[in-house]
Amino acid sequence: MTDPNDNPTNLTEAQWRERLSADQFRVLREGGTERAFSGAYWDRKTPGRYRCAGCGATLFDAAAKFDSGSGWPSFTGPTEPTAVVNHGDDSHGMVRTEVRCAACNGHLGHVFPDGPGPDGRRYCINSAALAHDSDVD
Image (cartoon, rainbow, N blue to C red; front, side, top):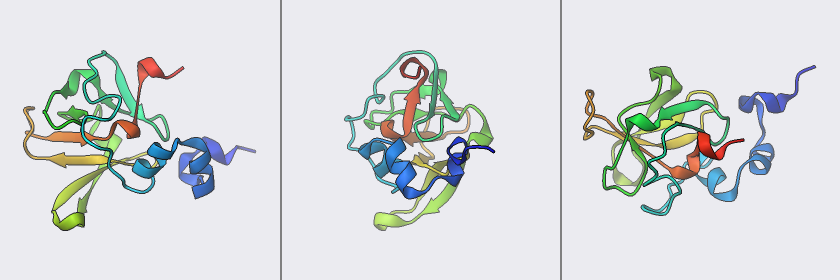
């Protein structure tokens, strides 16, 4: 018999709370946003990959990271187009595109059309939603 904890899509709210820190839960499961310039990764330049802090899925490569001046980790795109899913977000009186982890549906941040990459996108992601390879055992 397989353990339901092996598949993050099967976790209950209580199991997510056990698995994540309070900040990670607020961002990933409740759609929160950390304050600009406060997260662990907004200015990190270490090579490697960024994974979902909820389920461990690979999301972004450090080579796609750039300093947007926003105070959040910013990327020109995910490692694979299928790593994330986008949803319309009209909360807080704004029209934005929310970015979620395709594997566990965790809220990551938002994508904006003002990036420097070939597609002109800026994936503005909360540090609390990420885990860098160098920080994962």
